[in-house]
Amino acid sequence: MEIEEFFRMDRWPNSYCPGCGNGIVMNCMHRAMRDMVNLDRLVMVGGIGCSARIDGYVFSDAIHTTHGRAIAFATGIKLGNPELDVIVIGGDGDIGAIGGNHLINAARRNMDLLVICVNNWIYGMTGGQISPASPHECMSTTTPLGNPEYSFEFVKLVAECGANYAARWSITHPFQLVNCLKTAFQKKGFRFVEVLSICPTGFGRNNKINEPAELYKFLKEKTYIMKDENRIAVNLDGKFPLGEFANIDRESYIESLKKIRG
Amino acid sequence: MHPEINPDYCKGCHLCIHVCPRKVYSKSEKISKRGAVLPNVEHPDKCVNAKKKKGEELSCELCVLSCPDQAIKFLED
Ligand SMILES: Cc1ncc(C[n+]2csc(CCOP(=O)(O)OP(=O)(O)O)c2C)c(N)n1
Ligand code: SF4
Image (cartoon, rainbow over all chains, first blue to last red; front, side):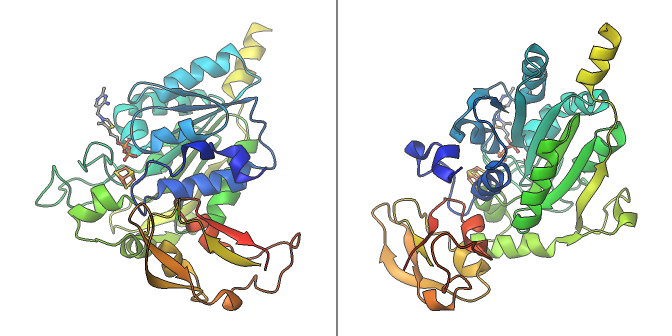
């Protein structure tokens, strides 16, 4: 499937700022799914935020929900019609901050959903406030002296809750991200893909990294491909391990429901 | 095959210049209708796909995947 059949190019150029990582995530989604997705059976669910708008660009059914509630709406859609492929897309704020509780419980249930969390370390759409995923000491509109908190690592949380798949990649590793999305798309149960991304407007400007290419380089230097021992270790050195944090085949929620109901 | 930039989609972020390992792209003075400073496909012959024909599988394509605006396509020579 060509990109014009996957994305609504009648809405191009897309609404993102120059150099925004969301567009790279879109390319990788297309590359990963073009051979296996059936757009008639796909539902994209987004909450609120720049990344959450990706749902509106895909040539499938899409629902734009309230902030943080995308996983809850998606759960309802999947239970209503288990034949559908349901993909949730949103930012670190949408999925991990206001939507954090839905994330935890969907992972615990092993709900049959693919969640793509575009983590640009900031609330992009509302002007660059910190999110729970912002790195320690980073600058933002709400932390002008630097972030005193340490960041939340959603992939580790989701893996510990019992999700079938949890992986983190970055827009600076697009080929690995494509493969990861392919794997995640084909599995059952709860699948969570965190994509580290860049927001030149919200994060870059506040941290005096003014060019998208410079921010891209900065992100690449902040990440490394992990070995197994890094899976669960708490990240205090400010470097983000990339790779699979969980890849299991636990009974999914729909399977478990069928078993109980008979 | 060589890469080409769609001036209507490009917003001038210049990530293509940054990611291309073969330095195919360069900065230019060209300004698009929307006011973006367009990159230039200065050395299409340096691209790893330069000698490929239509239908042949392309390699690399880092610029295509890394363009946030879906502005890069490979065209036949
Ligand atoms: C209930 C509610 N609270 C707050 C907001 C304001 N708001 C809109 S987007 C957003 C944060 C989005 O950040 P993130 O999910 O990280 O996405 P990004 O824009 O960075 O892609 C917030 C707080 C809202 N729309 N609804
Ligand atoms: S504010 Fe940030 S996340 Fe939103 S479109 Fe601009 S660069 Fe992208």
